Length: 399
Image 1 (cartoon, rainbow, N blue to C red):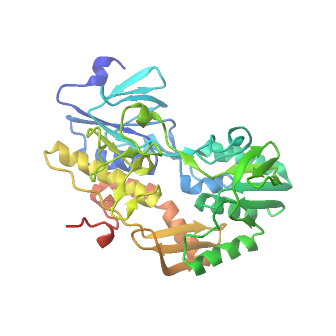
Image 2 (image 1 turned 60 degrees about the vertical axis):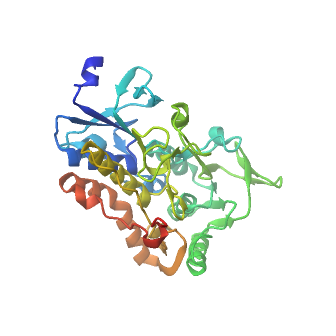
């Protein structure tokens, strides 16, 4: 594509969305649906691959279960948005350019930055060389192949957060001959209501998962993990879910970032240093009255929709509105037929209400399956994607 073709006309407003995760995809679909085929707005979505990564199902892919392969270009059909496949290698926020695969340059007038978090292989020595991660379907498929060949042995899952718990449960259920060990600094389910957390831990025990909380993994070896106290735990396979990092591209571009490399935004999701840049999902440090949001699908998709609506308002000469969001649940699968759903207050603290068992499993599957049809509905009725809990008094600005 030539420089002239990419630049468009003087009246074309170029919106570039980087990253087709849950938040970036929501931004691209919502924006394209709202602007239709207007000649004065061009929406482009950039992602490293055409396949949409269902992060909520990666623990299933990692155990050899068949999941749908969802096509990003197919979802964008009929919206007028175009798709560019490639790795983002540089962003110049002052020149308003993005370099793709080191050999292509894209220009923008408004940027939606959605390059979210991935596992941090530098967090502990040996992770990059000796551990599996779950950053993509390809990563999960590599782990699935290794587990299928293992037959017997020990799988150590590092990290007692949601990804670690779901992965340990799925592996233990799928491969009952394997010994599954779950290690982490915190007790699994520690953030839940005590009864919900107790159910989660008892479910892991029923599946035969050996849990060790209050431990710190300080190195990963070819056939073991080393703990802070000097102890080693033998492992045929290590799955690392114990920490994430964000892309360094935002900081390198000169955008103001926090200590974790997330783009610091104002109340409308605009970068505080570059107002022509919106940041969404776990690429953004979005502050609500209760604190900075953490990256989840339930919060990520609303940020993408809000950014799109804000861009449309700005194009119409209107002021973007502040973003407000309140959490409402934490669903955790425990294999295919069991789960815990912890309902939460808007600040993500646990309520007394929770679901368990098959009812919770059906609830979790409904949540997991919902993003793709939601994107489809937004193509026809963009307003359908603009409903989420605003958080009430937990997010309302103090006067």
